[in-house]
Amino acid sequence: MKWMQFFTPVTSINWQEAHQLAEETPGRDVVFLDVRQPKEYAHGHLPGAKLIPLGDLDKRLDELGKEQPIVIY
Image (cartoon, rainbow, N blue to C red):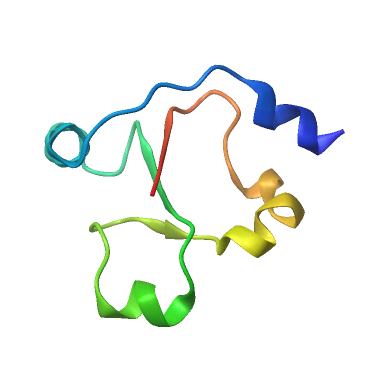
């Protein structure tokens, strides 16, 4: 059941911490997941961020690594 993945522990970070994390791990160890709409993504996003609109997330969970930390914005 893919929805069970939503019950894994999460930690909140602010934008400054996310920015620092992005600089320290340039897309290799951390997945930056943008859940906005494609037009919003096109107007600007973190370099290397993966786009999966929130409405599609449940159908596309298999695209995300289970062992990688994910920062969702």
